Image (cartoon, rainbow, N blue to C red; front, side, top):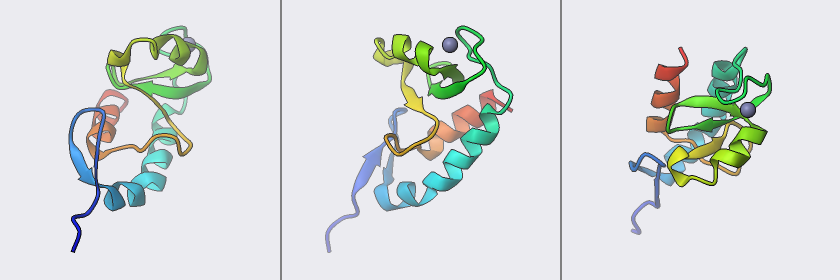
Length: 98
Ligand SMILES: [Zn+2]
């Protein structure tokens, strides 16, 4: 039997892909909840749709564009299907945005 496919979070942990994929709807719903009433950590804009894992804060799409030039910011969209969210990343966002 082939080994289950592993995927790596931006924080460097590896997880079985099927497990991570199964959790996405839960994580996205939780991120939506966490970002509620939050403003962009960079410019204060009301519409936050991205996260920077460097500071575990929510940012707006405009600031995300600027921040993504530096890979150290570890940007991820809070919704949609272009990024997989991982357990360790979720823990980080939860802790910083209680
Ligand atoms: Zn902003």
